[in-house]
Length: 325
Image (tube, rainbow, N blue to C red; front, side):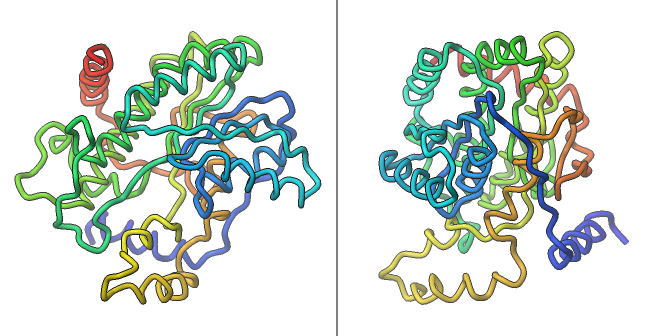
């Protein structure tokens, strides 16, 4: 039986198994950035839990940062925690200016020190119309590639000095990149020469494969000299607002917006469950970097992610793009 089928069966089997939970860790003194933290998301649950455990968290969102900060404050007050531990800032990963503004603000506001960067924000377009080509980013990139890979690369690059300082201060700093098992559905060759026929699911898989390569290349470049560890985090199949938001309220399929949550609830993880591996990788000590984590433990990334030449080539291309901004 092909390995892809075996893995697919295993993935479905794990959906019905008990859901592992991260063990609480005292995070007082730790500074953490979590991107993509809108309500109902994995990022929101990640940021909220890490703040409850004592970390000073900066959460990002695409719109209405004041409303999101109010939501965090109310949640933390209800749990009798310090509501001042979460600060929310707007961040658009497809806008180089927005990324630079955020990085400058963080460096100035926090004396340059950062202990954990969680690149959680991402998009998955065309969930219900996978052959439809979504609109490109404003600077002309395929939207999954721009949001899920180039944006995190740019942000991480700008925050590397802060992460290195955080590592010097505490002996441990981390970069978590939230990937997906769908990285196994595409080839390394497609990272440089996408197929002529567009498929949104394949485009998403390519962006997550590139992000996995980025993770392991970060580990190779910075772990030994700078005590900066990188983790590829697979949250599992999670029911969030990403797919439901794609169905317009005035479309014939609008009733699905109410039906889908009821259908996927018995199978898919809730956001708080999907956040557990990110929470664990951000908090547990010691923890081995340069690995693929799922279900709060070490998993197995696809064999394509071991190609160092591909990772180095992707890094060089992204560096050239960033340098030209």
